[in-house]
Image (cartoon, rainbow, N blue to C red; front, top):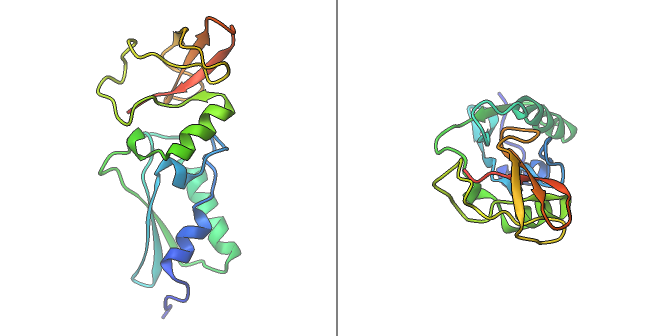
Length: 163
């Protein structure tokens, strides 16, 4: 029988800096994906929420969690995906938004939004801070981002969509 040998907060802390595979400057904690760590039925249960239902990065994140905990000699781990409540950009920390901007991705402007496909939102260029931007494509390199161009500095950039 396995007993809890490490505090669940310590386990949470060990995995909280795992980077998002699609935006490596922010962690799964910064994104709000890392929900909790519990010890149940002789296992550490790590609960994460995908940013999108079919997020292709979830397997990679799960593997990173298992690998990081294995480095700390913890192998009795289960990663649990939860879809309720659904992930929202409200869970992004302000630090995550700043890291996104500095990385060249325009973060969501609001704490929440009601129109996922609205084009009325002003998206600020993360490079020159201009508000004169235009959407090139509703979808960028991933489904959670759209592609924009700055009219002033002429640089393309991605915008992390509010949802």
